[in-house]
Image 1 (cartoon, rainbow, N blue to C red):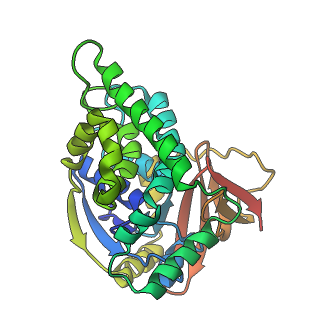
Image 2 (image 1 turned 90 degrees about the horizontal axis):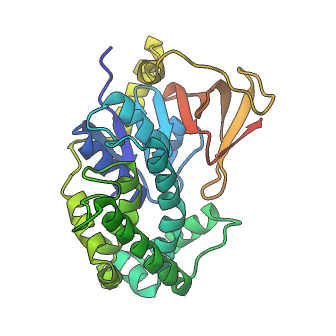
Length: 326
């Protein structure tokens, strides 16, 4: 079966959206771009996700894939070449990517969103919109410990040195390797990239911190050169309509992507077909509610129905998400 062209629901400033845009470019894929609002409410997004409102998410027909770690798995299945694991080392890539998406990202954002950085990001934006953004992100991070700029700067410098060490050590003798684990970019590179990208291209007034790790600046330039693939502009209404049509067809695109070996791995005592909620462990904990369709070794699938989007299957990675009976 030929899969439909995927939709990426994103917005330009989003670091994690940039991560996926670059992964799509690495896979040399054509994709449809739907811009989502930066703050709630997001009625078109929620029509597809059932409640999840973090950015980005990937849509194929009436299958919606949340979290960039799962999106990476989807893209690897759809387009195995070039791989996100060019030298193998799948476990190492995944472990480094998890560190980069958490520790590196939050340290970088603590540094990037100091007053000078905020002023540059929101230059020319009305004061009420800036206030709304702050309130929205505050609500999404309830209960989290926010990293202050000084602490973020200290940790970010250490992490940049670690990235530089990876580049040097991957090369063995002589000059630095072009990528973190060798001669081709892999999942670890894409996960580390978006935080550094934000510093260089969204808050250049603060980009001097990258001078402490020249090898990282060179690596960043190589990553940017990968590009975003072929982007086709689209709208939320088109994406929702495509979901509705796919819903009527009854085709399971998720099984085409992952294969039909959907082994149920029960860790919660919750049977398939039960009403459940799934939410992120920390940032952006708004739940998606629906029927538990599958719970495999690596992911959950919840099915919900929307008056516009039809029956939608929403997929989450197990790691980083909480499953509960509704």
